[in-house]
Image 1 (cartoon, rainbow, N blue to C red):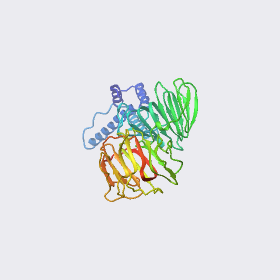
Image 2 (image 1 turned 60 degrees about the horizontal axis):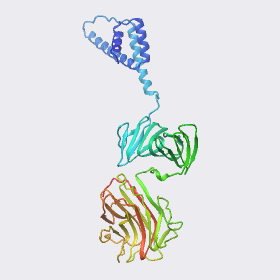
Image 3 (image 1 turned 90 degrees about the vertical axis):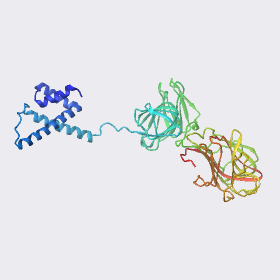
Image 4 (image 1 turned 180 degrees about the vertical axis):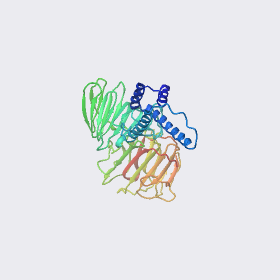
Length: 456
């Protein structure tokens, strides 16, 4: 507020304003909320002084010199107070501008990100007009109306509005639920509009932008020119800076899941099909390689004797943000031989061609599940022997190298066996198999890397 405005208001209360100046003040009071607020402050002060004066007068004090203010000053004071109250009521009850809908941000444990140039942390609000830059890790944006976006580093994304995101660079996955308004995602060379869909966008400034549809369909438009296209599930397209749209192979595996805290590496249920080299599981970027024997799928499980089958695991699945590996196996009886024999039967984890860890039925006469961490050490056995086919889960924590064997589908607080491997391992293969004279029956194998804040 300018000094001249303060002087103008004081002059009004002192009665020194001319008619034209007073009319100009009235006009400005209707147009300038800040000036109106200042006038209200002076009016309240004037009212308080009047009350104080009246009190002294009743006590016998000498009355002050009559004010020079004209009669209309009382009217303008009343007008100002009423106008101020009306303005306050309007601000309180009127809808005003649309509420700025914030998006929540959840970051991976290893994330490094900036929000409008400042370091961002879990729970940071992503407001319309803000720019989020992700240098490492990933961030999950919880957008209005339950829409979710997962942005992978390196990337930069701008929250233009609750209905529009601009991916300036990088890779992001979007999930729009049923019965909500459409979401528009912009990239340098394309504009994708989708409703009730799951899709990924890759933005490459100066290169080809891509969009991959996983579920539902999207309307694709080139940012330059007038080219448009409709992409459905399992379809993808690239767009260049000139506006040319080209169909390409859809690659969902190039985008993180909506729950990147968990990285599925392998999931196979052996209840259908045949088992041979080339078998692809329900989840997993590789295929099985049968290097020995001829196991068969019988009913709801795989069984065989003297066989070895390998599966490549993504070596980057274990990381700072996902340091825990879980290997869950469900075993079954076989017609060839019992689970426990003097030979070996079970599951191994490899890194760069070396067997690092084995669990199952180790060499020897003991009829129990065991854990073998190699390094010329004897297999470790539980305090109470665990016999026969069971569901077991191996847990490895790359932060401290701890490895545990648990009974059941998830690790609990009390493992059957606990030991140590080297920290920082990145397993790249899993083997299932049985030695000569031994047999293995397997219903399912599930391998995951997870984000886990607990240490044992």
